[in-house]
Amino acid sequence: AIQTLGLGKLDSAAPYPTSVSGDGKKVVGYAFDGTNSYAWRWNQGDSNISKFMPVGFTLGYSDASAISQDGTVIVGTVSRTNDQNNLQAYIYKNSTLTLLGLLNGSASASAYSYGNGVNQDGTVVVGQATDGANADRLSAYRWSAPTGMQSIEQWLISKGVAVNPTSPYAANAAGVSADGCVISGQLSNSHGFIASVLQLFHLLTRLPIRFGNLAVKVCEGVNRLGSGAQS
Figure 1 (cartoon, rainbow, N blue to C red):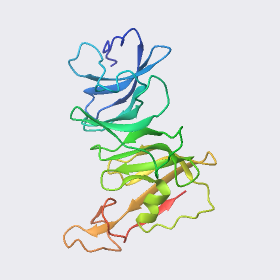
Figure 2 (figure 1 turned 30 degrees about the vertical axis):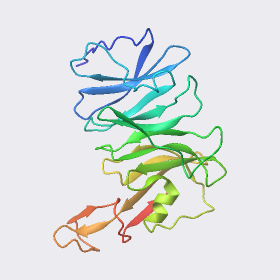
Figure 3 (figure 1 turned 90 degrees about the horizontal axis):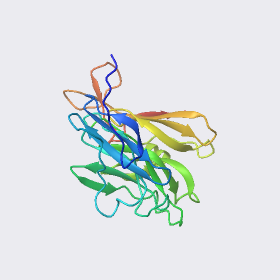
């Protein structure tokens, strides 16, 4: 059955929903009035959608592109100015907005980062950013609190995965698995990619194992015994 939620409008701007929480009780998106974009959220029981950007970000461009499956973290892009310059990816949790910064110290006047996707509990964010380590080209990134923003290639290399420097690079990351270990997106040659870092440990002994299915995946730790692939 189709349920009409009646989200209403935001300052006369029509809403565009982009993501829903795992239980279906929270929805996020953006509203565009022809000039500006505004991030919004809706919780079950609300009579209308509402803005959630804190003071200092209310006049600028903002969108909400994803919400974690558990509904605790919203991810998107925001600017402090009333245009689409100086855009940065953000996470919004517990009424606090945190900017994720830029990739590899990009210092270009037009440098930006977009927040596109988030894992199940909101600890891993993926998106696209100008890359200060590569002449400000547009690169896909993975962000977590322990590592900060890394290009997909940097993330793979840090886990001991060999990356061919002459191959097309990851240009945009759009999706991430629930555990944050698998990322999908688009390469610089417009082909799709899947990047993964999988590490296997015996559930009881925590020792690495080569065979069997009694294992768990770990991709945020420092152990380098994992394997991965990029295509």
